[in-house]
Amino acid sequence: MGLARWFYTNNERSLRLWEGGGDPAVLSGDLQLPQRILITDNMEENDMKYLLGICLGFLTAFCLAGVVNAGDCADASLSIAIVDEAIVESADLSALDGIDAPRATTVYVAEGDTGEATVHAAIVSNGIVGGVQGWSLSALVTGGAITGANLDGTSGADVSAGGLRSVGFEKTEVVDPARNEGATGAVSAVVLSFTMPVTLSGDGTAGVLNIDIATSEPQGDDPQTVNVGWRDGMVGAGQPVANVATVSGATADFCTCQAAAVTFEKVVYPSFLRCDPNDDGQSDIADAIFIVNSLFRGAAAATCLASVDCNGDGLNDVSDALYNIAYRFSGGPAPGAPYPACDQDGDVDCEASICGE
Image 1 (cartoon, rainbow, N blue to C red):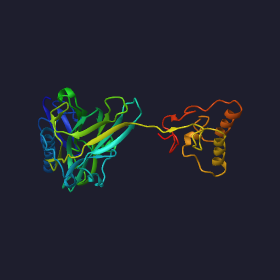
Image 2: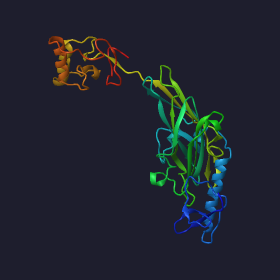
Image 3: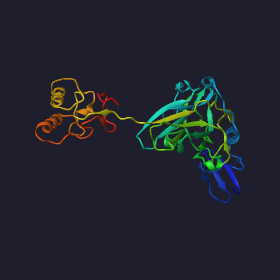
Image 4: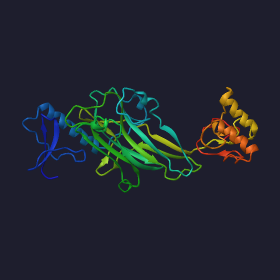
């Protein structure tokens, strides 16, 4: 890195990097932490202490192995939870409900397609004095593939993107299995600010990481489950990463009980008979009358709206009744599949049918 000096400018309250003889440049999140800190005459004592505390706390959190806690996360002061969506920060603590068990979800996938989903992780602070200043996360993915990791829509995103990070640090990446004994996953490190007292709320839930996952095989009849958990020591571009936070410049361990278990299953589309809106298992003139009665005389609608669509135009209207009559008595074309027997036709509007599944 050469002769690197860090100094603080009170007017702009920004951390800058200076290479000897060059002009100051705003610190980029892609840069490494400094080799030395130069305290200038115009740097206030409290500012110096804050900056040193953040740097030392971050170094400790990023490089040392944390403790993976087991059980009793509902009562822990600091936990990692799986939540429904990416969030910046919320006062809601409901993520603690059931946190001692895996968060199980099911995703339905068309046969032959690759199942995809995103797991959203959050830090739950429960009575943290001072608030979390930064964190590092080490995630392990098993049973499938990891396709990406990001901070979009979370507290770790830059303030310009709606997050909380301002003149801080961020590094998030999918790890190389070759550097992790074949294991797949992601690591992420965030410092919310080097120059300002930006922290997460002491009581609340803050989104911190999105992990994109996929099935390893095209979806068939058998379900596929992809797990996302927390394992210290995953290696990205740098050193092994631990699951820890920085609070008041000191390392704090997470309770990491909750993992995500995403099960991908083949979607089963409804089976129905086209042009059989009265659902008696056959298509005849009674179905044309049924359509007219439901459209114009206040009679009950079909329980499988897809079966009303005799002409296959995606609509339910009087033209379907006319199509039925033309086919029956005027030599018109037959209804399209599924006809004359029950079958599937993709994701259609069919609440119930005599055909069953």
